[in-house]
Length: 622
Image (cartoon, rainbow, N blue to C red):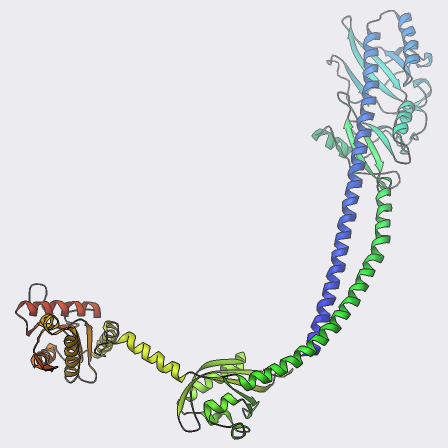
């Protein structure tokens, strides 16, 4: 038992340690993930701030270009337009040139003379120019070079490095003096790259400007410009749903970024701010490194201390267990010797190996007489083989049995015990001992029988009371129903009984009832029942008769027996009886109805003057 208990304790401690380590790992993982989420959320917020600032910067530049075009469109003098071009370029460093187009798309005036005469193809501009719009901007594909005169449109075969020189053509349309004026502004991406890099250093991330159709126009990163879609399809889909939001992206040679996009309303552009994910998590990694560097030794130290503490507790517990077992053995020996209940210990073959003094006191057998003998020496022969077999089966199934048993003392006297049997098994499950407890309940059973008798019998006469009468009557009805016989019930009440109590006293009245019960008992067969319901009312049940005639005969005998004088304390007392007769199943279908009809028949007899009997024939008369 002790090794098994120790093994269970070791297993429990191992499980506890595993749970503690698991809890520490889960808790640490939760803290690490929580801090990681906080760092990523901070990165998203910073990226959102950058995107908003860059979007406002692009909007201001585009709005300046739009207002400048509206101003120049109102000027009709070509020389003044050229002067205005030069002044605008001096004031707006983000512009490389301004060019005026005719209806065919040819440059007719420009701040750069080399552009004049160049044909501007506007088919790739977004959104496509719409002549019905009052004023709008359309964005072309990026160009290499400084202007139309010395550049070419970028493509997948002629890409432009992100940091290379180039420009972005913006087609501006305005209406003045009843005519449409088209101008192309060459946007200098270098100024925007410088602005983006100033607020978002290349080591931390980069910014991008894309058309709404997903074409990458400029970037502060290292992605080459090809005039094709640069992952913009997903951005285009998101822009249809919202004007700002997160943008999952993996950029710059596989480095993941935390990206937030914003639409440059009302212009067909979008700005995306990228923060490198590894840079955003750099501080988090440092904190987690410190946490692991400090937490791992602490966890190992706690586990070591817990192990040492557990071993010490185990040793103390083992010492206490040994002391407890010694005390328990002393206590068990004392209890075994002094307990009032008889205790018998047998071996696996039910041979008695030990008994206590109470066993000798209850059974009469001394320890020397009982030791070595089979427990059957107490057998009384009262119990059947079926009872003993059922007891052994329950013992084998549950290892314990208890119940009421009748045993025989050494002097041959039968006594009743409450017997409990408990099996003791070894580690292999084999029964090595049985501990039998015997509590003598003979007096208790006798008292219980007496109480039961009082509960079902009249205290004055000793006859069955109403409860026992109904129970027996119910059994009689059930039995005769199968035998095709009858039950006759006589319900009789004493005439002139009240004057006896009033004139001679209740003591004489009680003696009269007792003597009457004894006299009527002689008229009752062994299978019949005589009961007192209370007062001077008696009931007699005749078992399994052929017809009501038998009841009439007995009723006449009862009437004659009752009217015989009684001599009580020198007084000659005479009474008579009014008797009602009811028959099952002719008159009633159950015991309550049968008793009720016999009662009514008795009142019908009393109405005739008493000292007679009446058979129930219905409410109209007997």
